Image 1 (cartoon, rainbow, N blue to C red):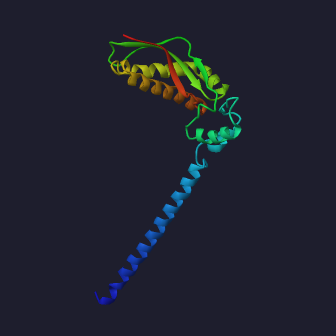
Image 2 (spheres, rainbow, N blue to C red; image 1 turned 30 degrees about the horizontal axis):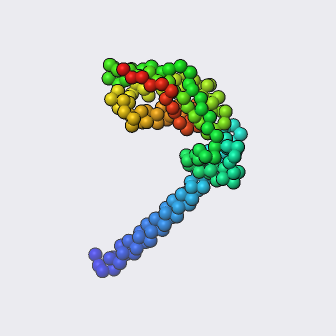
Length: 191
């Protein structure tokens, strides 16, 4: 083991450092490019193409909305932020009441539900088409609720969000698009 063998590992370690630095820069650069594509909608499933697809629901602008504002608002809506001042909301009650036992088995809830959407009639057609699956998802969501929690305003608001997510989950799984923006209680009885 002479002195001449020691410089060789140093060269290898410099080569390793240079290689690791190069790989790190490529990863960072690729991540930045990916972030730009994602932000522009290029990597989003159904990004820009979703608005142009004639089979997908479209936002319905209000009659008095400025077309330039509507175009900018459509971009924001792709990220989940629909401006209610620019788009028409459609309200529809779901037929009948929903009655379910609550978690723990001693209490029950009976509710009436209405939904709203800023999208065209295709969302409502999908709701009618998948009525049975939606009703089942609503009942399953109700059975998971804590009786004490839904007795509070905060609990009712959380239940509305859970119901909206359940309905949109059914629609997304079956049609590729949810579209329900809000759930409303038309009646609410617990015992």
